[in-house]
Length: 101
Image (cartoon, rainbow, N blue to C red):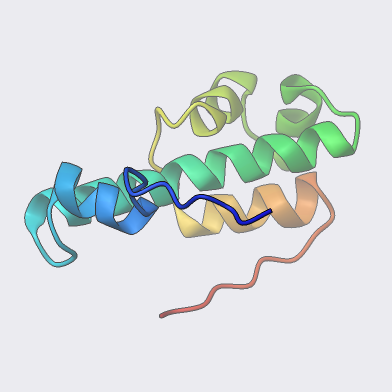
């Protein structure tokens, strides 16, 4: 049986272009930056939960507060690179690797 193509489908990139403008526009770049921040918080939360730690336990291990960990995980706080490195290294026992595209 031949699959019927749905002409109403839009790619995610096309959706972002329509919703926030093309890459390089102020609105799109603000969206992209916010999304990266969201992904960082989600990643930290996932790593913490994989290790069976509470926010309070993670905060204690890396010398910060539960409130600060919560704010990072919920995308409500900017984070310094030195703090992020400390949370990942001391709190989660992992290594941070950055790339530039």
